[in-house]
Length: 107
Image (cartoon, rainbow, N blue to C red; front, side, top):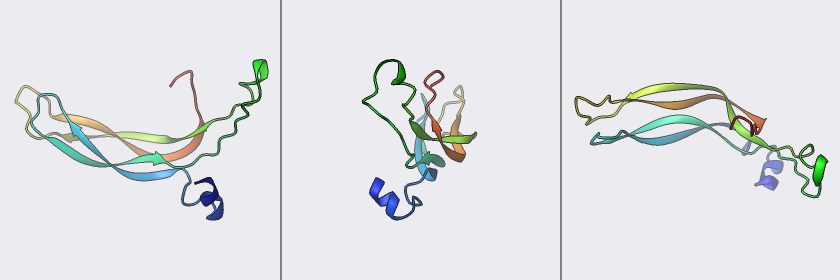
């Protein structure tokens, strides 16, 4: 994929919004529902030198992931729920994506 990305200028494999279908179900509800949403997907350049050890090893390790810069949650209702079960479920919708460093302190 890296060679392919280089040949086409990175436009095919670049970090971008992608349409994705989620199947959502709720506990005690009889049916599930298919939801169309957007996710962040694609190639991000990662620089890693595995030969570095000790004190300097982590300094030179740069890993980037395609992550949402803007994320909202939308609601949908799952059909077939009993009266005492809330049929409303929330699912994520990515609005903007970017290649960012992995934050291991919070994720």
